[in-house]
Image (cartoon, rainbow, N blue to C red; front, top):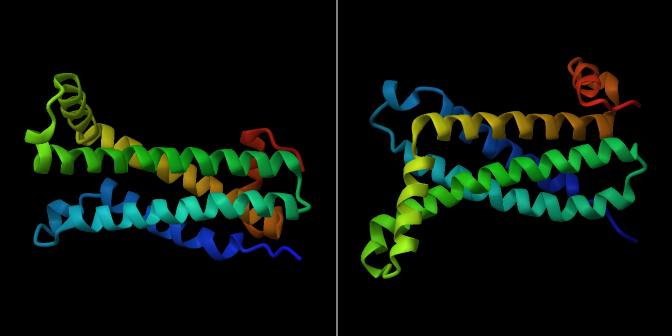
Length: 171
């Protein structure tokens, strides 16, 4: 017998990445400068993405066990992948930043060095990083909403019918 363990894994990445986006978007750094926000953001991002991979992996199993509307499940899966991708881009920027600052002298190939510097500059641009965090926030919120509709139906969330209509999903 196969068990659906997907619900065990989905809540942690949603919560961690949700909080990451809130910290990234809102001006906490300005009003509470004594806190190491960058370390908190990195922690939330790393563990949120690890949780996302677990949720995606268990979601494949859940997809075959659920008797939900196929279109709804597919859109839910798509938004889960989109949100994971967006947050992975942000994490990749953090990794590049760490590598550039700690191991810059070890990078001997000029094209790789230039790419990493340009990518770091792009991702650490406040407009770009906040925009990606906002897009990730929207994508993960829609993913969670659709997951809730799969489990509890449309009546559990007053926003669900609006989002479903916007996405063109008919139940």
